[in-house]
Amino acid sequence: MSEVITVTISDRLADIDQVMQVVYEGFVESGYIAPNPSGRRMIPHYLTPGAAFILASVDGQPAGALTCIPDGPWGSPSDGAFPTEFVDLRRRGRIVEIGSLTVERDFRSLTRSIAMSMMAVSVRYLNEADEDLWPVITVAPEQERFYSSVFSLERRGDVAALYGEPAVLMSAQTSQVVDGLRVGPGPTRRAMRELVLESDPEWLTDLRYPVATIPGAVAA
Image (cartoon, rainbow, N blue to C red):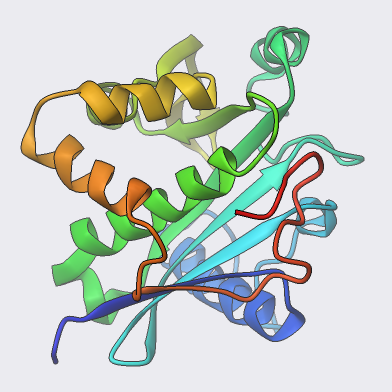
């Protein structure tokens, strides 16, 4: 295995289907959802206008998935677990939930690199918008420090149950995330900074149609 990671961001049906398969396998393995005949995780939030689907590949094989879901007709995927926190965040501005982070079992030795590449693409997606969005993520409590130190995200509210496991909600404005990456120290933050700010990277393919589909976004 060459360990060359490439990432695609897309809103095309074939790519969405691939992401739903990867997420399904990871969620079933983790016990978050029960197996179903379709072999896919489908939630109505995936139909939200401006939603983007991120698929990481290693040597052409699907290796990881991540979703970017703007607030919309169905709300956000984690609304039910953090209702008060989402009410507060919506008062601050428009939110986008970054979630469904999954790495395929065969590529777990590359989990860190795969996850960082996909998270970098999600930040690039947020940074396209012509307004300062509020990305939100839910993570295990023990991961809070990592997301705070690398992405400048701040915890919102208390620990809550999500998919039967403890989770915390974290958020910050996109400008705070990007500014933190620009000036923050540390090798992980520097690596993320390069992935986010690199111009026209060869490892990233954008298959969205049109290129900027997030409401309020402009083509990069």
